[in-house]
Image (cartoon, rainbow, N blue to C red; front, side, top):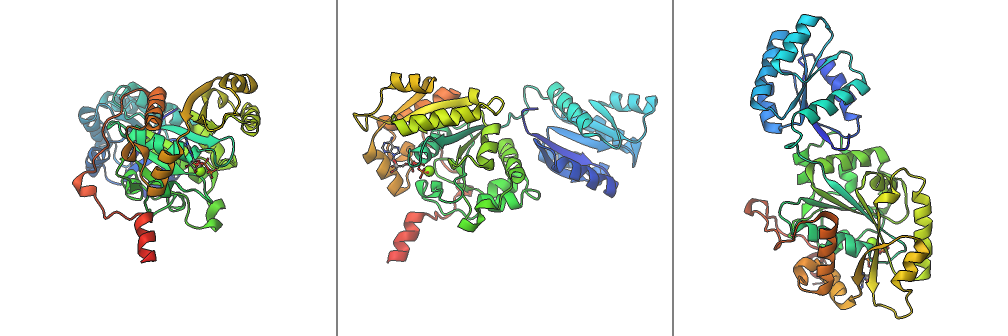
Length: 403
Ligand SMILES: Nc1ncnc2c1ncn2[C@@H]1O[C@H](COP(=O)(O)OP(=O)(O)OP(=O)(O)O)[C@@H](O)[C@H]1O
Ligand SMILES: [Mg+2]
């Protein structure tokens, strides 16, 4: 399965329900949207949560459960239905299938059977309408200070200009990340809070815990304290990404460049891996090293795209053709050197699409977004009235503390 599947479950038996919940929470790419102990109220829950699939245990009251299945099938034709029972007799299975269940599983459920059933019911039902899960763009660099945060932040903002996109920027530079500075925001919650509470969060709570920037981009910043850099496990982080994928169309992740386990998890789940470089020997040598290492991870190399940043900075730089020969790979995109525009954007915490929309470098980043995903960019998103909060920015914070 490639997408996150959002599931709601109904089982009046508390023990059975808790077991199923534990089982689902531990599974990759499954998001438990809601659970209910009452057949009578479950339809309402399905209407509110609009899951990709439901799992209904029949054993507490077969008649009520089968009635519920018919109801869901009628009013939510795109929702996959899986029925579960300890009974396996033919007449029961027939009634359940006639009511509209896509799959029947015998309790206790086995992981591979459930995965197969979910795959089938979500494919056969909503195919065209099911929310496609988000695409991850992992941004790293061939060296420190190469411009990867500049590109990650501004690419996220460029993607957010298309109103049909929902974009989140994740700062995975857990010790010294500065994406919050680029967007001049002081977030309330960090990636550490979200990771540690992942088992309790639903999609709505997740969105509330992110900070929305006026460009339309949501930010998930690095942890507050340096001591916390090792506090997030790969497992927790994969779940965070799974949930974000279910809620956003694009996840731009600014990696740490240390290629630690969370960086690797991001790359494994990414559709695009952007490696930012400049045209000097140390960077090109590092690209060869990175590519050689990624060769050992199934499928990663095919997703790598080399982005040359700061073209024109130094006349002694190696030529593009020589660089391509050295790394044995084509350059995917080039971004010019323009320190004045970039430094102003960064020092004022205003992304390029807002602060310098007409600058050639902004156009190059917007064109990179289009090359990756197609679709034109539009004027900046306007925040809906209800969502406006008093802006808490680093610049305001610093100027207050100086006065
Ligand atoms: N295209 C560009 N033209 C001019 N200056 C640039 C360009 N891209 C980045 N810079 C400058 O390069 C410096 C490093 O940029 P940035 O912080 O984005 O790099 P980084 O790779 O994320 O660094 P780190 O390794 O510290 O995370 C900044 O001063 C930034 O303003
Ligand atoms: Mg950086």
